[in-house]
Amino acid sequence: MAERLTLTVEAEDAGKRLDVFISERGDMTRSAAVKRIEAGQALVNGKSAAKNLKLAGGELVEVDIPEPVPMNAKPEDIPLDIIYEDSDIIVVNKPEGMVVHPAAGNYDGTLVSALLHHCSGSLSGVGGVMRPGIVHRIDKDTGGLLVVAKNDAAHLKLSAQLKDHTVSRVYYALTVGNLREDKGTVDAPIGRNPTDRKKMAVLSPSQGFSRRAVTHYEVLERYRGFCLVRCVLETGRTHQIRVHMAHLGHPLVGDATYGGGKTGFEKENKSLICGQCLFAAELSLIHPRTGENMTFSCELSQNMKTLIEKLRKTVE
Image (tube, rainbow, N blue to C red; front, side, top):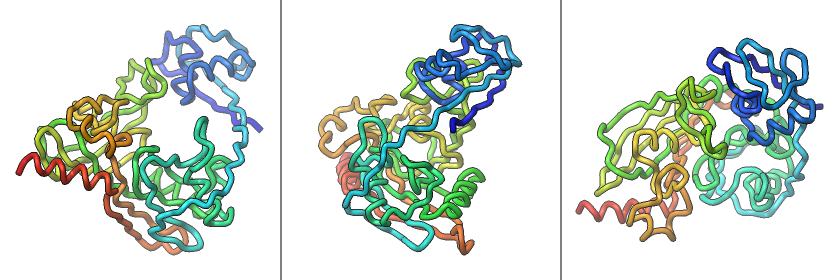
């Protein structure tokens, strides 16, 4: 059965086209929003409407989201770096370049496929057929720690912790340029980039729908034109650290999507950089069954360590 998304048009959305409003608030591409409207799966105050309808504010918009077509993720015998495992959860160190779950263009070689093989299919079903066990994600080119739920009860409790910000996630990042402050907090809302739906952006209320996003950062080491930064997530928005660091004027090394990848150092070391230099090195949570506070950590990837050693030589 399709999921029904119910949205209220706020005052700041007045004047927007219906398809634009649905794409922004429904977290989907504009073309997907148009398909919903043209298929009669989007109603305004209970009635069908044209995609170019200008909203006045106060309307109730209902959108039917079809169930995803099963991709039938298949178990694959792919080695896993397992940090911890019991009957409820498994904590893995995902390598850089591995996609977490199947998606368009990436059906094989995913973390989900490896987990299905390792766990003999015993993963929570809350995330659906495409994302069994997946409570939270990290980007393909970001390496590091991820907790996976083996059953639905564990999944729901871990999801609640993420919502309540009782899960702590610490990342290490290499940034372009020298940040002015040694420590700081970026409290800036993030939403879909209104001109490029594949990207996220810091948005003002007039620019589109966004959600509060908070990142705490600390500069650990300074190099010639770069920094090693420790980032602690208070919220967990898509591309949050990447967007926030770029917002400060210091995109992550190798992150061409948000302004990195343009320095001589990055070009000279492209064999070590498969994307943004970001690593999830620490993870703290409350065990969903025992209530125990648990903290996990792992070493930075070899590529990250090599890049840091090279940068250290620039200040010797």
